[in-house]
Amino acid sequence: MFYTTHTHIFTWVVALILFLVAVYLFKAGNAKASKIVHMSLRLFYVFIIITGAILFIEFSANNAALYGVKFIVGLLVIGFSEMVLVRMKKSKSITGVVIGLIVTLLITLYLGFRLPIGFNFFG
Image 1 (spheres, rainbow, N blue to C red):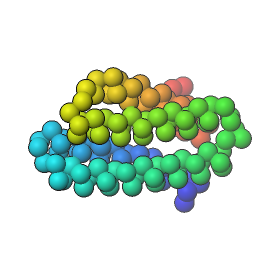
Image 2: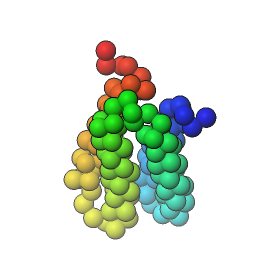
Image 3: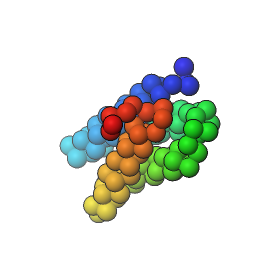
């Protein structure tokens, strides 16, 4: 079950949806619901890291350097998404963090789809 990308993709898709819901709820002024969704999102961060680590251990022999880069950039995505939500709650500027989130997310998606166990959308 954990040796395919399906579980990992499911966890980060759910996390992405939870992130967007948390941002929406916070902007709508519903702090309590936003906090609940944010805590659920943190649980999914753990699931993402666990499933990603399992895939990394299982398949890194195919291309260890790029899988290592993807693993690190994936951790940065989690870090940036957490920083966005925390900085929003503290009413601090999120512009730079959002840019970092978008850049690292695109790099992670590109590497994930480009590497041997990903889907080959790019030819």
